[in-house]
Image (tube, rainbow, N blue to C red; front, side, top):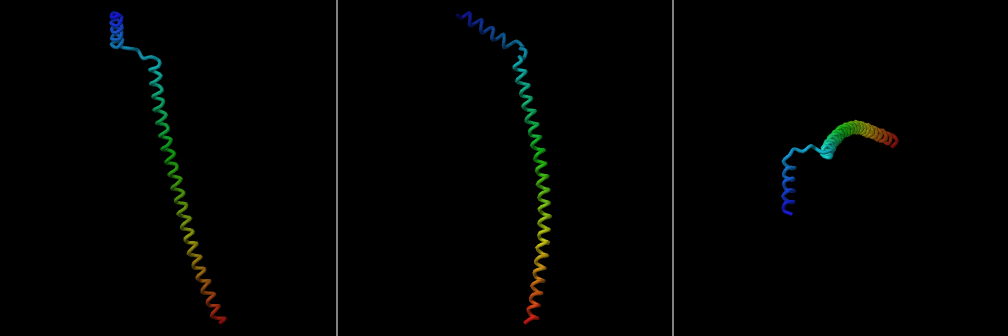
Length: 98
C-alpha cells in the first residue's frame, strides 16, 4: 500500500515539474475572458457616446427653453404696456364723460 502511495507521489511530482501543454479548455477560458473584456469595453464606449448625445440634446432643449422664456418675457412686457395704455385711455374717457 505504501508503495502505491509512493508511486502516486512520484507521478504527481513529475506532473508538476514537467511543462504542460494548454488544453482546449484553457484556450477556451482565455478566449472567453478576452471576449468578455472586449464586450465590456464596447459597452462602456457606447454608454459614453450615448451620454454625449443626451447632453447635446439637453443643451439644445435648454437653449430653446431660454429663447421661449425671453419671448414670453417680451410678450408679457408688451401686454403690460398695452393694458396700461388701455387703462389710461379708459380713464381719459371717463374724465371726459363725467
